[in-house]
Length: 350
Ligand code: AMP
Ligand code: MG
Image (cartoon, rainbow, N blue to C red; front, side):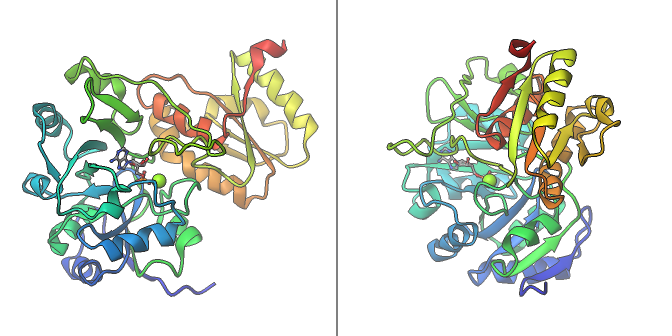
């Protein structure tokens, strides 16, 4: 289907300045540009322009209560976005910027209220991707950008995913190929004492705790059917495929047996598993998306795998809860939200 979104292919390592200039013009004139970062594709707008920021919420169908992340290209831009920056932020910036870490800080007056969902705080990140950095620099202002997907769908890790969700709702798409990390940034709030990890992501809890020993993390999954408004980013249903996803917990034998029992119950089942687990099911004729051999590969392939199984038309996806160390913590968080909390404890079924 032809779309009105202009797509420009761009080199991910050495982007052509002429293409970047076209995209920067769209940003400066209040339009929307989807672009690659090292985590997932972002849907960008001028962070100083409330109307442009509003366009992001509309394009994604994102509730106004869910604030965006502001992206900067150099440390000099920090003071344009945040104020009262604590010493802990400088420590983290020196070690992890540019990279897959987002900091929640006090907001500067220059940032419009709708970007921050009316909060007095702002989320800020410096992406480690040549296209993203060049775009922010050429635009000459910070860029507000959530993931470039429809709200609650799996995040986009390729230009094709962006078009699948947002064709016609984006002015320009920079196609820099697949993203390398594949899950979103880790979000750390520095406006509370002690500091708190709000969302596990591309930078591990272990690496952050080495610098911030009092960093807290208590997973919280808000129910969107509840009356009260959940805290930003805590909705249980997120990153979800159209198919129902069941998440299995337990050791190998118990999980494989429970999965076979579930496969027998449904007609259109697909599997999303690490290669070693997927190999157990090769006798069956069903769509299988491999998550590769380790958590780095699993992060890179997770969202693409969910989308591929949706395209294959399965009704139920079976996945396995990963170990929660390193990147595994982010993988577990995304899978649990994709499953909307439907976890099967295979041990209990033996
Ligand atoms: P996305 O870029 O689509 O991954 O979404 C941005 C994430 O950052 C969401 O989970 C937001 O809830 C979170 N976020 C943005 N601003 C804030 C803030 N001021 N306080 C807490 N979380 C935030
Ligand atoms: Mg998102």
